[in-house]
Image 1 (tube, one colour):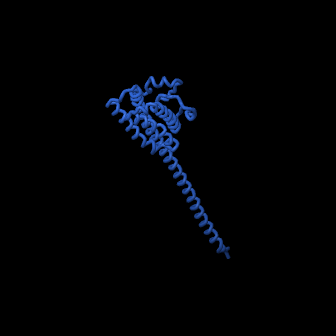
Image 2: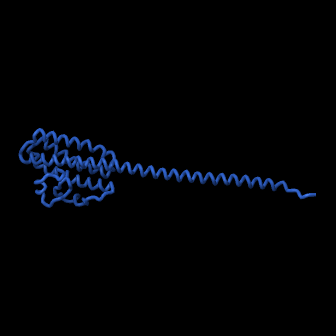
Length: 210
């Protein structure tokens, strides 16, 4: 009588085969899930880099636009201040030009306020409001305002230098050290941020943008 294979052996073999199939599927599923997670992470990093690049470009454009407008504003303010301090009145062309650059400065604020970080936004008003006050005094001259013209100019120059330094640092560029501007009353500077030890020197020449 030949030997007979026990019934439990085929059952065990079948169970082992089933377990092997299930284990293979589980491992395959885990590998696929890990692959998909890694692919999603790579896609997220790529999207993040693209978003940061777009943000940097947009912010740089906004900064450049505001800086250019404020420097042009300074050129007109300097000439108008010289006229008024000389005891004369602005002519129609000068008044129109001053109003135009003031309007351009106001319109250039929007993109910066929208895209700049809070640390930069806090400095924008320090650079722009003194210029707006100076423009208002020049457009409506008053003897009582004569002594206020130079301080408004000084405040605008200091605010611009600090704002510009923070903007350049935000974009990853080298920036002018401006820590001393937070101390004692600063000397007057041109819109190109070149300081002078003699305040009279800055009143005898226009900003470097002209």
